[in-house]
Amino acid sequence: MANVCMLLGKSGTGKSTSIKNLKPEETIIFNTLKKRLPFKGSQAVYNSEKKNLFNVDSYTGLINLLQNVNEKALHCKNVIIDDMIYIMRKEYFQRAKETGYAKYTELAQHFQQIIQTCENMRDDINVFFILHSEDIQSDKITTGYKVSTIGSLIDNQYNPVEVVPMVLYSAIQYDDKGNATYGFYTHRTMMGGVEIPAKSPADMFEEDFIPNDLSIVIQKMNEYYG
Image (cartoon, rainbow, N blue to C red):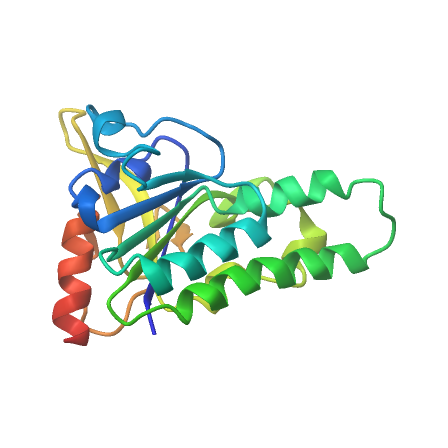
């Protein structure tokens, strides 16, 4: 059973940048938007020639690639899916003319199939889902954050945060001089009256806020699970 972790947060808070300290020879990235990785030198170490960067835009295509990595890419220890929700969004637009509620159930089922495929991968693989968050509001006041999906018809049926064991929430903290520190919240907490939807196994992380570096996260997971 693979280690599965969700990286959730607003755009520009360091989710994709957290990849930079991983070993490219042990890492495979599935890119749903064909976007460039946001750190210097990324194109030289992650590309199609090295077979560690793949563009994919369907849930069936992604599942097939994940199964292939599991069975044949024995060198791979880390799998990144960035941004995973666009698999759902692209299928939604392809099926936009379909009426009724059945397609929303199917979209959620297809998304869950991806998660289950990842969970069933080898024990020595770490899988990271990168997802954007959006505000939860009450009377126009932000009270929390959730996964940005395709609307309430999905949200009422399916919450991806509930079906993964670990969620790190990316954010930026500023010191009294205005200097920014990019990092991940590791535990559910309240910040300025807003609930941060982070979670991790008990005692895996001592700190509530850690640097946005997946090599640190992997080290903690390896120490925790042995």
